[in-house]
Length: 145
Image 1 (cartoon, rainbow, N blue to C red):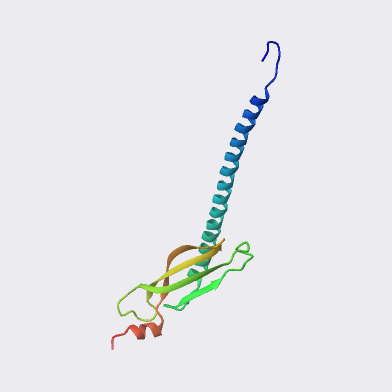
Image 2 (cartoon, one colour; image 1 turned 90 degrees about the vertical axis):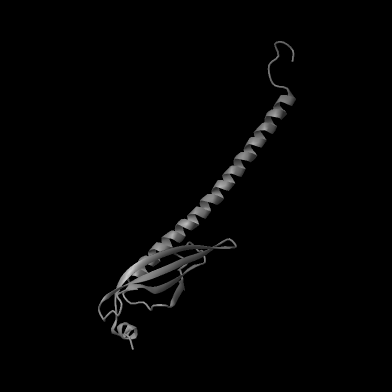
């Protein structure tokens, strides 16, 4: 450049434009990765919320069949349109030996909530316990013969 002349040469402008383009591409790549991670975390958060809600419902029900697989779908309005469902198993966990009718026992509730995210099936599992009264039928089944 000559003295007294101000401004940038074409080469300086091109170099600045290339540096800016590289920075913008890096920024968009980071932004895309962050948005995918946020969407995945939102799905897991929704799955955890569905699991807690279903577990509360299962623990509140007084009589559920033991040793049976219970399952069902979730309403799409609750899952934001995702295909989702649940599977639960209630098993006896602890009871008094030769328990009589009306005595207390402890059941384990195992719950798995699943949903489809893209092409992948994701799951969230919970385990809870509840106290139940031994029914006369269960007491008769446990009685020694």
